[in-house]
Each structure stands twice: as structure tokens, then as C-alpha cells.
Length: 375
Image (cartoon, rainbow, N blue to C red; front, side):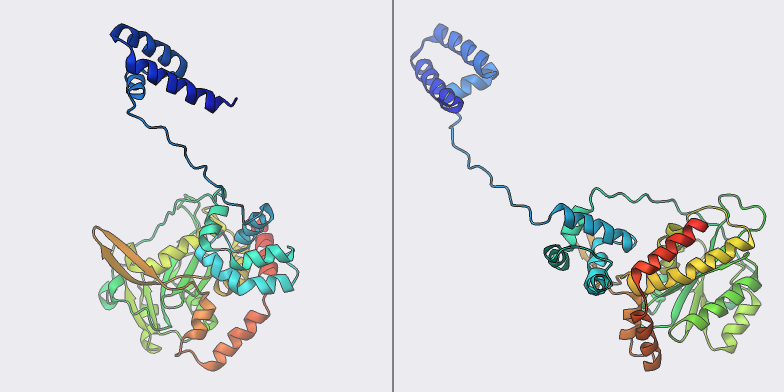
């Protein structure tokens, strides 16, 4: 006889005895019932009085696993290939790149696994990656304010910026001093287009105004669209006569953020970590060889982030009670956003499309990893 049946029969007999027993006998029955079941006397008394009705619970059916270990391993490899971006952005990247990866022989999975990878949802990707931990780093910075020419550069806040038109960029300087601000050290001039998320990092020997200005002109020549406006913080490397005259001469809008308000430059500040710090960390780079290697790295990394890493844009905010819900658009890579922009010339779009078809994301990652190892 099964154990469950024995316990049920025992309970029925004890209930019948308890119902007809006197006070002294009930005490003895409670002691026996508590010793057998492990219940407290109060709970045992309630059970024997019939306060709890025994009902047979339905056994819960476990869902059959849809995705295999091979699927999870493939998702982890693809996640690493696409720089551990969020699962919604990774899903968009897979929609674009999975056929190319398989055609190039970089994705060696069977037909069933490939079919599941084409339809796995972002939520399932999150669950598959839940055991993956990518360590974060604390962001530091150091910028001297340029106070003499501030009145000549108008202030722009986050709410004032027109993020619909391609060509308005935010610029910032990331210092590679390694927590030691003494002496001369390399910096990265980082330029981010607000509308498309297109990023252009470039390394310079130091933060001298001439170095920053020359790097900015080089970045302008590399942009796949016409530069219309520049927004910077209040550092002296940006707020100077040379850059002000250059913007006036070329009819570029030049604005600056409020002092101590990093959110006024939210687009480039966020990219400072995801593009620069996440790539090269917080070490000190202070030699010409460092600058050369950094620029060789950025030359490849700019192609990687702009052509293969999707980004999302905030469409609006909705207040629901005490909470604010943020609504984002569908993830797209920066080059796709440039292609979709009506103000970008067709010849530039054709050049971007041709450049994309010549790129291989796996080869790019290998070159980036090799340069990182040298640095």
C-alpha cells in the first residue's frame, strides 16, 4: 500500500476517534497525532476537527524545453560577438546579420539550431544570458572649465536639442590619465550624432586646443553626412577663439551645456562609457605609440559600432501614476538610420551601403581583439 494511502486512512481513523472521545482521551489522541505528523497541538486540533479539507492537488506539468544547450551556447557566442548589447538590440542585430554569418561560415550550427536562433525572442535571450556577467567600471572624468569665452557660445539644454535632423553632434574629451592627472597623457575626442547615434572616436596626444581642433576637422571629413552643429561642455579645449571662428566661418551652430549639468550632453556622455571606457578601460596612455595604437583600434571599432551594433532612441515618456514609462523605437544600427534619413545625399547613402557589404563582423572583432592585446 502506498504511503499516501496509509496517511489518509490514519487521518480518517483519528478524526472518527477524536469526534467521539472525551476530553482526557482527546488530549491523548492529540499527543499521538502530533508525534506522528509533526504538527503543533493547535494545528493538529484544527485538522482533527475538520477545519482543513484534504483535496488532491493537480500535478503541475513541466513545459518541455524548447531550446537546447547548443542554442544557449550559440546565443552566448553571438552576444560576445556583438559586444554584449541588450537583448532587444541583439535581437535586431541577429535579424540583420545571421544570414551573413552563416553564409560566411562563421556560424557553425545545424539547421534546427539556426531556425531557432532566427525566432528566439529577446526575453528568452535574457534568460539564456542570465548567468553571463559582464563587469562594469566606474566612470571618471576631469575637465577644466574655459570661462573667458563662455558668453560667446550660447547655452543649450537637453530639452532644447533638435534630435530629428542628422548632422547635429555632441563632442566630449575622454582622458586616459589612469587616475593620475599629472604630466601629459592621451585623450580621446568623442563625437556622437544625436539623431542617428553615429560615433567617431579619435585619439590625440594631449588636450591642447590645437590637437582637439585638428582632430575635430579630421572627424568632420569622416562623417557620412554634412556637419550642421556642435555642442560641447565648458572645457577650455572647446571654448576657444579658434573653434568659435571656425564654426562662424563654416556656418556651424556652436552651443555649450550648462556648468555641472552632464545630462545636457547625455548622448555623448552615455557613449563615453559604452564606446570608449568599455573598450580601453581606465588605464594610463601617455606615449606616441599608445596614440598610434588607439587610433588604429578606433579605425576598426568605429566600423564595428556604426555598422553592426543597433541602438534605440527615446520616442516619448508617459507618466503612469507615480512611474514614468519610457517608449523607445525599434533598434537600428547607426548606418541604417543614416540610410533612412531623407536629408542625407543619395551618393553618400550608396557609399555607406557599399562599405557595409565589404565588412565582415567576425573579421572586425578579430582585428579589434588583436589591437587590444597589443595595447
